[in-house]
Length: 172
Image (cartoon, rainbow, N blue to C red; front, side, top):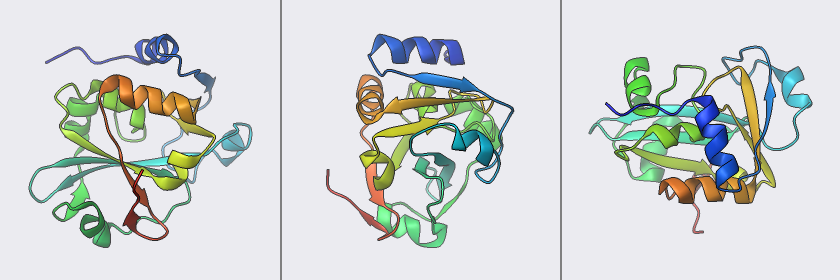
């Protein structure tokens, strides 16, 4: 098993590729509903991230705007997967190197074998700045849109962009 990237390694990587990260340390946040007072101090779009596995064993990471409604009963039809359910904490740790509550698009840096397909909310894809945990839920890292694009490009991930309001894939 390959060594997993740490928070420090991730932040150094983001700096190296010119992603312009800004990180704020804060008490642990486990669910989107928590930490509203923390989010109020951080500009940009806030996220919720779901680690899913479909009925055929394909892994998915969904990164959506924090208040987006995600209909898991219909999402598989939109993204072209088999029926979806949550992936186990053990599988998440193995593939993405994070624990429940710390799921983040930045964890894709640890998916060396590209086992995970990445779905990005259109709202996040179009936001001026986005916020994700830097592999731990005790901090939030903000990057501009170009920084997120640079990160995904640098690790070789092409997101499937979905408009969760319209429940459809968006051409980019």
